[in-house]
Length: 330
Length: 239
Image 1 (cartoon, chains in turn blue, red):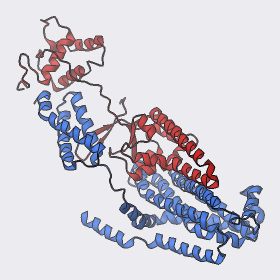
Image 2 (image 1 turned 90 degrees about the horizontal axis):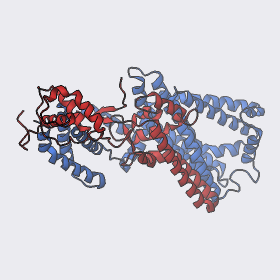
Image 3 (image 1 turned 90 degrees about the vertical axis):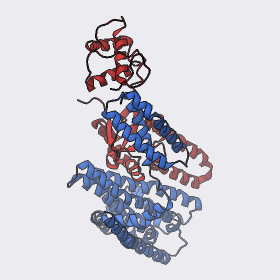
């Protein structure tokens, strides 16, 4: 068969596929079955044309045709609510448990510096000046004191919104950076986690030593359930990236990194959710001085229990069912 | 040594998609365009919420967050698979398997911008892009994505019309391919160069009887290889 015969015999199919692609690219409804059939035919034609070294303009036309069809056929469709619910109810807590070793390391890297710095700042009020400058310390002092300008006393709804925006921009940004920095052998994530642990511990220890224990603790207890877990989780996800690169096992380094990123990014989805909740609570609930500290302790404690239980137990039965289905399929 | 940066990805149907990864300049320009667009949107929002006091400032911070982190993710998940800047530059984001980019990959590659930015102004990303043949930055490496040119370049056109002429001796498959490829570049080469190349193939042209130029005669051979025969417009000579 000569190239001319080939073109004459199949060109109608190609023009039809072109038309189907044009419809599929612009409209929602199109004939998917016809697209798939034509796509497979044209794939055959392309393979033949390449094997027989037909003129390049011909193979190029077939190449661009198959490429557009390929793009349409393998497009992802399931962005819907069901997918989102599955992410929140099964995938995220499952991913957290699958990373429990990284989580443990990240939690220790956060908690040990936090306790150490907290203890140091509690014993020696001057210690905090190693970390923060005096004006920042003074600001913390006035924020948590019982004076009129203290946190939440004179705050309006506008203030709350301003802080909400600030917490979203600042805290979620930290979470993202903590994850991303993990690509440098995990060192970046570790640094972010340790730094945050030291900072938070020192400020906490200092404020408790200065006699603002109740104001401080009642302020942080509720949102910390979400915020601190989120930072530790972001750190764990980052460590996973770094470890995959340092110790790739039986994969190439790049392949290992790619696999790790695919699993770890599920945790980052959850981190975004947790930090959004934390920002809302911190802006609208934690700062409300009219709520009695006892109530805040109660709600805060409940939040801690809820978050830990969610990460520890949510989504297990369904995951088991999914694994069974996979076994059967495999 | 390979000169081009063509990247091939095999599909389940057994064909190879050839992708053209975009280099530093195209992607850098796309970034700058996006940056200008983001700056523009931010300015508009800041003027709009300026009179809303502190609540407006809160909204401004949230929009800053969205523009910094979510703007590329959302645009890369649309059908064009490209931010406006990339679209202007004719780029799109695909998985390195040739598939459309997935939400997880789009998020991963854009979160890792923070790592690419290190130590300043995308230093790590630029080094990685210059280092690699497929111009991936760190985010692309982790997400398994590729930024490619969305359009095909066609260097070859139709074979120009000519009176079909049989070659002086049987041609091997490689020779046939070379002649047809040469003929397809008729519109891109200068006539002199086109003719010069044709004279290289003089031995297959046979003795000159008509006085036509070498390129005219070789075009005839190309038409003959494609299946046209002298005298008859009927296709296929029953090779």
